[in-house]
Image 1 (tube, one colour):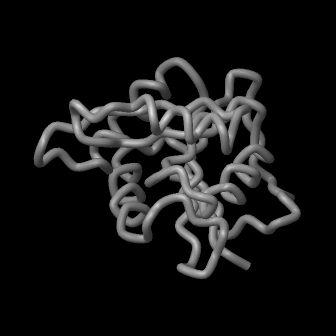
Image 2 (cartoon, rainbow, N blue to C red):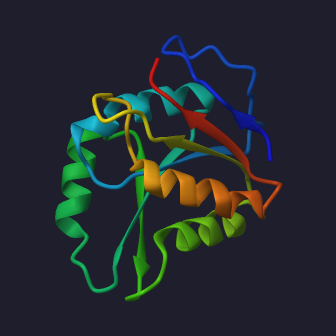
Length: 146
């Protein structure tokens, strides 16, 4: 697994994706806190998808409306979780499947509580890092606040 330990606000990076590359950014919710994370993730590639895991049976329409209002240029993928299923495992499995079709860069934006770059909790980012360690073909960038 290749890890970019720090992504600076200037979006300068040595990571480049192919034309088939997709940047995936897991999000806990649709708050203003993840806006900067989405903006920074777009620096890695044109195709950016936000991925959110929620309980099976949840009405996604309100979430989708909120997301589209905040981030109209970024697709939102909503994955359903059964009770007891780990969101990290569901996300890792989805990324593994998507990685068979496209080059994938997962941006884990778990900045500090004061940061406006946070898209996921530190706990979820740690669990995702462990899950992606089992899939060495997945490129992971860990975004921290500067």
